[in-house]
Image (cartoon, rainbow, N blue to C red):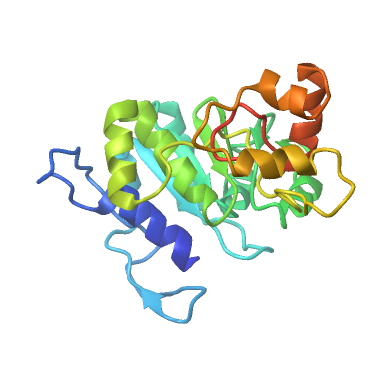
Amino acid sequence: VPAFELGVVCEAFGLDRAPPGLPAHDFAVCGEQVTRVPTTSGFSVVPSHDLSRLATADLIIVLGAAPPTPPPPAALVRQLHNAVARGATIASACTGAFVLAAAGLLDGRRATTHWLYAPLLASLYPQLTVEADQLYIEDGPIVTSAGSAAVIDLCLHLLRREHGAEITNRIARHMVVPPHRDGGQAQYIEMPVPDPDTSDELAGVLQWALRHLDQPLTVDALAARASMSPRTFARRFRQRTGATPTRRGW
């Protein structure tokens, strides 16, 4: 089990935040058996419940392992399908998408996973649409996410959907993370801000913007500084940074 992703889910849903007035969740870590499970970081964890605990869950988050992953046990597949049938939400963190795909839950749906494994997911399961440039994707009752830090975005999305923005912002402050990154944001970009010494036509304006973050930075003003139309600037900006110029956190 990936230690970081497990820790993120436990932090988001398993931590008791009742004293500061934040919602508490009936949280459990489940496994096929209640026995030691090795993590990717060298230590082991012991789930608190077996798969029977899933029968009453409103939200099930499935973790994965480095592909190729073994076929999911029949008991897990049955529980996941029953959960969807009763209206629960099923989410996957990182390579947990391989588990959902093998269970047939992603057939005909859009999904994402860690960019490194996205081509393999697409080749193994051509019946689904893999979008490797997404942090997370919600398609009906199924939500899939990319890996590592994107699992934080997944959890905050699920919390926001359940409790609203105000509560989720408070939880994000407790976690000391940004309260929201849009699911359509690119998983990574090769070069977020160009070197000012390069000939990139956006380099100068981006460096200028970074020095003036205390001021309102409108698309029109940035486009004028770059000697472009706002539409052209927005297109070039997205190509260069992986985000739109109006999105926070670029």
